[in-house]
Amino acid sequence: MDLTAVVTGAAGGIGRSVVTRLRAAGYRVVAVDVAPAVADLAEAGRVVPMTADITAEAAPDDVVGRAAVEFGRLDLLVNNAGRFLRRPILDTTDDDFDALFAVNVRSAFRFARAALPHLVETGGCIVNTASISGLVGVPNQSAYAMTKGAIVQLTRQLAIECAGRGVRVNAVAPGAVDTDFTAEARAADPDPAASLAVTLGNHPIGRMSTPDEVARAIVFLASPESAGITGTILSVDGGYVAR
Image (cartoon, rainbow, N blue to C red; front, side):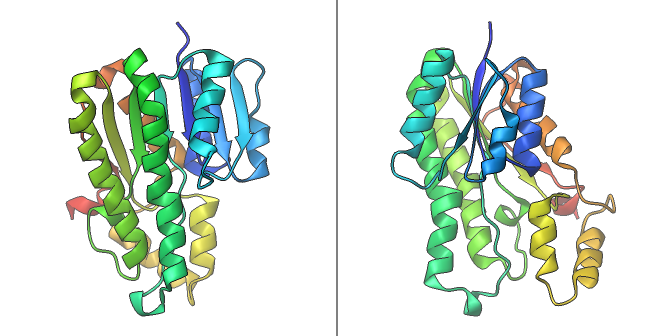
């Protein structure tokens, strides 16, 4: 039986690695991103790319509906799309705050709500991408950390709410991941080299994680091997929160 997944934020970094890993595991995938590069993932009968703004009102129903039309079922939702902001609270505007919550939290809530009726039918699951910033305090990330803390609690709440309906809900909490997303944020720092040194020093393994390492954790949480796991936040952080 072919399983079907929806992956948001699929064009690059963690999301693209998740699509690759899911395909290797036999999934059919609806890959969603606002970036046109998501089209590169197209694979006839196996991967359907959708260029979409996940904050748009119609996006969750459109995407979930596309999975139903193309593949006839939905077994997995990976809420991976997100935005990052490193900025002190005194320099964070209301617009910054609202934009982060629209992408990082509201869209995850709405996609979960749209997907759940289908996941109940298939005994499927949800995996959210949280962050170590949702678990511990990190300087200059007040708004971003709030969004990821919300994802942590959304994960736990949905796990309890949906357990009786046969749907598991978990999250991964990456530390620093070696992606273009991270590189762009670091390039905006006054001293990128010093910032990188601090980041590496905060991760006991002495390096950033790779997108594939995070993707493997996501696919594990979606697999039968994790059948007894729900409401868990799995840190993929090189030991960051264990310090």
